[in-house]
Image (cartoon, rainbow, N blue to C red; front, side, top):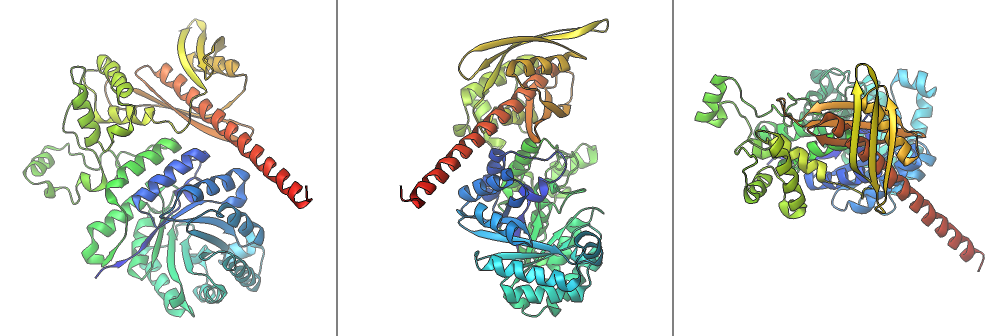
Length: 527
């Protein structure tokens, strides 16, 4: 009988720490709900002590997730742990995840602490957390570059203090699989009281070995593996959840290990994370890249047509990947459109199908054929996690090589009022963004702007992704149109709508907190 390893997903924490991968509160909740549907055992929702926004996001995730454990990352300090406990107050299955570095280089140059001081800090943090939370995970940061006997000593002490999970990270992605497996086995064999705790591993991908090292650790007896969707994370990222899940599924008999991931939900989860972070999945990415189940070479096509197993060791359906079975165009009816949505993994009953079909017809008039990628983009673009403050009414661009670019923008606000502005810019898109800034009365910083084509061909839809910021906060926006200027304008407006919604929600939370504090003060004073 195969043993089961737990899947610990840290997309919302380590994944979000990657440059240009920030998510707002509502996006984190949306991803957390999907991770729960995916079947992950533990969702690390964030680092509550990092900022008020992080604490609020962890609290929001903890309030909606019921089946999965929700973890909060905390440094080995009581202040961090208090912030984590506050964020997890309403969690059905809370876990404090506390850490401190154990490698000589980290202790000397980063912590400026002796090994004995590190040991004492670790024990104090775990003891303090366990008195207040039923599950406590302890991580020895940079464990692989640490003295293994010191790691065993620290682990034995924190087990005695109440740790229920011990994490062995390869924090800088330095290990080779032939080294990491034996390292995990050594820790397991030489840590006193190890039978009272589960062993976890957290591998980074600096040398492209995160997944291989994680599998080596599983073979050495690891009970939990830490990973992210699409392999997101610091620097080169973390071990990829989708790759690990399908290795455990496809090679279950050889490894004698399985996990609880609902594999048909993998593709949808990957697409969602890509959408909310604005980070595209590389085409040749294992499991979820657009070429993962594509066959172009004639000999491959012939083999797959004769027997799919000739070149496919897993089916597209097993990971929820769509397959091209029907070409849709302007003559297609609504029923065929709905059936194609089902084939792609979407549930028409949960969509504004009439509006979506109308947008499909408009697109079909502009293109010869509408591909699966086009349909996915339409659906993703129509899914909103919050109401719009602004919508585009019309735009006009005047631009050329011998004159300054000008743009006239007309927007409608949520009250139904129309506003119009004109601006000059270095190009049509700069002029459009400047006109929108004037309309909303805010000066936003454009942190990044990307344009891409949803499919190939001259009639492809343009997909624009922007990241804007103001006063240290950042928001993402995405726009889709066969006109790249319009796609850019829609993306900028989407980012502004996300900003307006989040700032409004934060003002509401602050007002509610102030009212609660006032009520508590009155009650304490006997009023």
